[in-house]
Image (cartoon, rainbow, N blue to C red):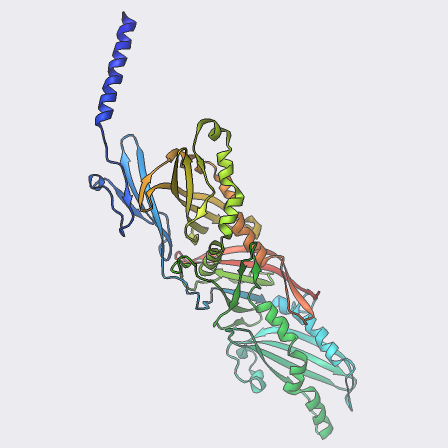
Length: 511
């Protein structure tokens, strides 16, 4: 009897629960995203918490609005929608968003050692003058005391007489031409121009000879002046400087897409005996389906100085990085990389999923270009993606909001990332969003280790392949610039940031 009574009591409670459950029809959280702030059901309006850009730095970029409702027991239901915030970069304007920095040690390590421009200059001068003979100075013997230096007129006021104005600084070559009976001190100055489509140098020179007769003057005319300087400098010395200072060469991606860099209307920046820098731009196009989608523009940002011992450096402002990400997204490269990473296959073939779940997911595709922004100690990448979730016979489009926290190690290959924000909303219609699959999101978030490698390898690999293990040069030049390794550093102002790559580079004989 007691057992029967207990069973009857349970049956009554079950029946009562079913009756109450059938009568309890709460209001579901839905958000119509056609309005600027979203439209929620009137019955929930007082309970909906709206957050704008939670965890996202202010300023231009990829931002998100989130609507959530708290329920008893600590449960939360939420949806979100992302949008790009301007101002945006203009494809028609060659904005200076990066720069190449050439250290003094690449020009001259103090003794014109191997792998420097000074060593190559010494070879060029010797080859040009070999076999020269001037009566009564005699035969050419050698070049001595050669030095090559980033220079400014305030440090060399005596150069103003033959050089004129060089407010932006110049490259100063100083050496002595040793003939059989006379030694001729020579100074050659190469003054860079503001480069809009190409870089050029104005060449000026001064050769010191102090004789009192016409023959000596003839020697001076032969060895001194701009004609002599142009002969030994034009096309080779300035060619090597242009190769070192020029923007990175075009980079071809699988599928035929090419990343291109170009000159911009920025002035060279030269520090006496330290470094010379030239800005460049990242070329971007427009998305055929929606030309209004463009990378955000934050503007110039402070940059880090060269590390001690670095021969070369590349600075990439956030605008340059976001332009690169935009181009990689616009051409479909990032989506192809995400598909190749196989996050969907790993999920769909997981033993737990195959045994207990009927739903499957498609490859992730990016709806908007990913955007980098400053974050404490590094950079934060935000992404708005789409995924198809199939639970036969129903398919649903999911909107994924993801955040990745980049940390930079001692090499460009040591870029690390932690999975930050990860949320999922589902489209009941293209403009009506609802909460969905909270357990699925929790499961994916638990796979942070896979995101660490898969979602960032493309970005790290592109940086490495564009700027590391490259051989730069031009046809006809005696030497190429070879880049072996890179050490990344980030500087941030809170609202803007710049990635600095110190490069180990050396000049080698041209192939």
